Amino acid sequence: MLSWLLDPLNYEFMRNAIVTGILIGILCPVVGSFLIVQRMAILGDVIAHAILPGLVIANFLGIEIILGAFVFGMLSTSIIAWIRAQSRVKIDAAMALIFASFFALGVSLMTVLDTRLDLHEILLGDILSVRASDIWRTSIVALVILLLIMLFYKELLFYTFDKIGAEAAGLPVNALHVGLMAGITLTLIAGMKIVGVILVVSLLVGPATTAYLLVKELHWMMAVGAGLGVIASVVGMYISYYLDLPSGPAIALTVFGLFVLALLFSPSQGILTRSRFMKLPKH
Image (tube, rainbow, N blue to C red; front, top):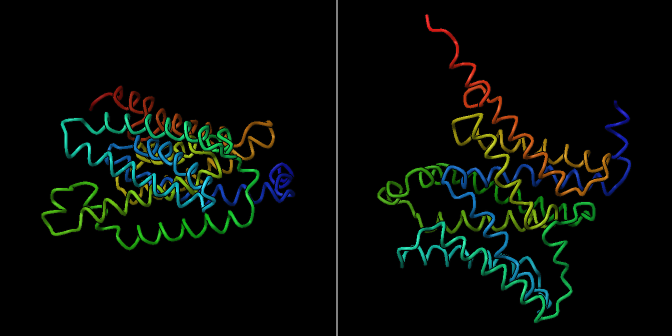
């Protein structure tokens, strides 16, 4: 058993992948918890696709692709908010429109600008190619975002559950919104290298949703979600190693497996445990 656990660690690429997976496994659920409680989980998927044009343009201009991705990620959320404020269009429709349009723009630009970006790698990632520099970059992004969430937790909590009340109390709700969107965008960009633009959404939403079935308070949701994210990342890497599966999908499927377990067996909300509790005789 011990050799089964230690053998993959003999390889540097596995050690790098597991360390980076742990970092993303902690960061994504913490940030994603805000999306879950605001019922805007699909926004993570929208931003993940919307950053593609920024990646293409930045690559074509020879500048840091993270900068391009961040600009277009923030632009997508701004346009969604603008459409919602200026029309009768509901937010889900606005998000779906931006999702498809920005992604289509990105794919078109890849052809027009003839960039060397690999769409397959962008979408699915390549965690096994993570280098020490990627670990440091991810560590800095995670540390900054988690520190800011810790510092402004009370304000974010108030804003998340009662935006009107937060505004009435004098909180800078616009700044909180921009800051939260920036945190989500940076989290997605950090995870893009590891599991790809599409599958990073699984870590952003999956562990937080699973934690939502297990606990009631937001701070516990973040903590449990982070723990589940770490478990999913590590277990997914071991499954990938021993079953020779793609690492990103292995992690995403592990995330889903943990969600199914919580859905069935959560002490308070599990389908099977809830049914059993309802059948208990009354005294």
